[in-house]
Image 1 (tube, helix red, strand yellow):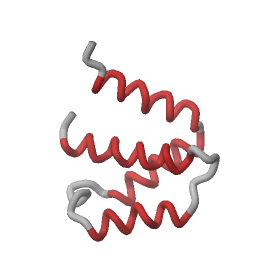
Image 2 (image 1 turned 180 degrees about the horizontal axis):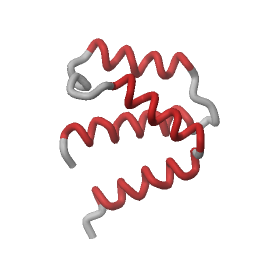
Image 3 (image 1 turned 90 degrees about the vertical axis):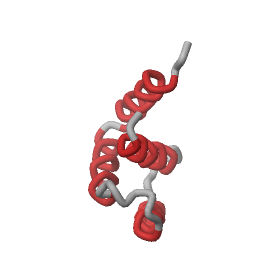
Length: 80
């Protein structure tokens, strides 16, 4: 997995974690945005745009989003 794609996948993981209680709170999003602004880790992606896209997708159909996310993980990391 390329570095940029890995960073986007990490954002997806963060959003999945936020949504596991049934809600995505503004302070959770703000924390991710703060991390992206104060560290250089996400400097090569538009973190706000990625977050917006992921949140829209998970809000529209959370089950489908999570299923797609885990399928990506299986394809990427399953080595057997």
